[in-house]
Length: 163
Image (cartoon, rainbow, N blue to C red; front, side, top):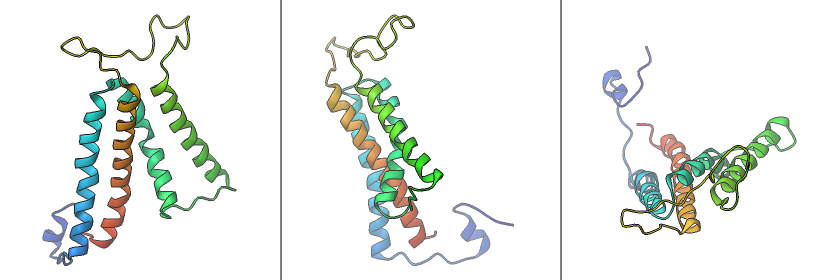
């Protein structure tokens, strides 16, 4: 029987590995990226833009994670294979599509199908327009970069400290 989770060590009677200063520092950085930076920057970005932009930009997290893993050498990209080309094409389409949707602020994309723009600027409680689209989108994109770093650091920390 295979036990999974935090109780596996207790139920199987195994000893936890020692928690060194290096491992504790990695866990601290992991917590810093995962909850602190990601959520605070995300909510700051929402103050400048709409939830529609936040949802559109959330689609870049898998692509950003893939790019960071390739840059850090955790993922090997074989560009000559069909699988490698599909990864690159998917990454470009994902990031490009999210950014086009986020920064599209003009006329209608399909005038016959919709009666209003895809993205509307939201008005706050006091009637002030929260219009700093670029700043809000960049803050949300920064928060998603922090979340992607958290996902990658989880793999690194779990190799060092398996508990």
